[in-house]
Every structure is written in structure tokens, then in C-alpha cells.
Length: 248
Image 1 (tube, rainbow, N blue to C red):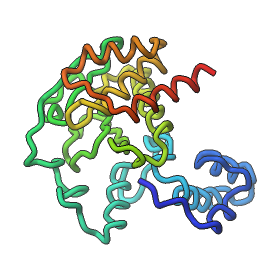
Image 2: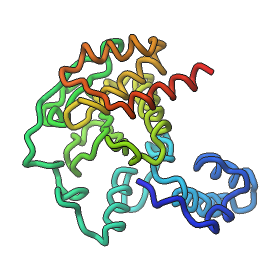
Image 3: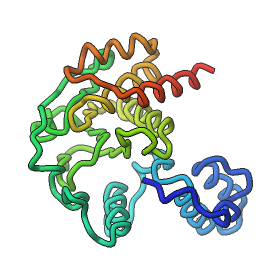
Image 4: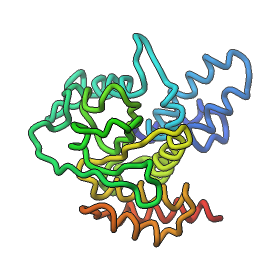
């Protein structure tokens, strides 16, 4: 979810020295003088430079637009605008259910360290346990696939090397969002299409980054929990970088 690295003029228009989208917006606000307009312009330019995945998930939880749109609605509108109003081959982002003709295994397992976190596949959304208060989706979901009774956090994380503009940041944000939801005493369901790679990576990172589990032990716990555990090497490497940075 990224518009590209932007022309030189975009970089020049941003606050000098900004190193991230968050940093750029904070600098713009601290500069004073009509900060709401200045921050809005700086945010637009920063988004074009760093991409939508550079926006913290905690900010997205509070983002809203007219008429009654939340962050997921706005992403859907942006995706349609980028495609000249057309959906992709699977009908996303307008299809009510993502890839409705594709059969997926139903997987639902309890996180090995935190019983308030459930791990599974997208098919589990059809029979989501009543105790679940929030869903963290690590893949695209249909416009009506997540039950309206629960909070829907949608993470733009692509299961291919070099397709994530802010990979380490995105993984850390996903783990931290799970922790934030749990701090609110919410039961959280974390899923990918088949609970293989991205689910494994985020679940292991949550154990290591937020629950104090050694990384090797974190991976082992998820491997023994998810029947289709198969994290891709680039995700394993990214998780290791995030944990390594935490320990510095």
C-alpha cells in the first residue's frame, strides 16, 4: 500500500530531517501556525513517500471520515480510486466475502502463551466464537466478512519478499496492536487465509516482543500450535530484526 518513493519535490516539501511518516507529521505540528492544515498537507505528502503502512495502527483505530467511514472504509475507497473504480479479479475490495469460491481450512487455536489470543484462518470468521471482541486480519477480507459486532483491525502485510514498503514496522505494529487490544481486556482473533506464514510470524513476534518470551521459544510455541505452521524466511528474518532492535 504505497504510492512510491516520490519525486524530489515531495521530499523537499516535507519538514526537513523527517525520517518517517510519524516524524514528518509531528515536526509539522510542532512548527506551529495553522497546524491542522499544515499537518494534513504534510501527512498527504508523507503518505505518498512512505506509503499507507507507515501509518500506526493506533492512529487508524481513531481515523474516520464522512459519511461515517472508518479506516477500513477509507482504504477501500482509496483502493478503488487507484484502480479507476474497478475491483480486482476476486472482486476486492467490494466483494462481501474474500475469494468466496476458494475453500479454506477452518483453523482455530489458542495462542500458546496468551489464552486471550486466538489464531486461525479466514474461514473461521464464518463461525467466530462469541467471546471474540476484535479481529486482526493479516490478509484482505471481504467488505462484510468480519462480523459487525467486533472491532476489525486490517493489517496490510503481503506474503511476498520486497512487496512490503515498511515490513519491520508493519510486523511490530501488528504485535503491538494485539497487545493494546488485550490491555483493553478484549479477546483477539488473529488470522491469515490459512494460518501458515503471516499468522505464525505475528504470533511469534507477539510472544517475543510483548510477552517476554525468548525468540526461539516463541517460534517453537507457535510451531507446536498451528497445524499449517510455515513462516517464510523473509518474515522470520524480519521478526528477528524487530526483536534484535528491541534488545538494543
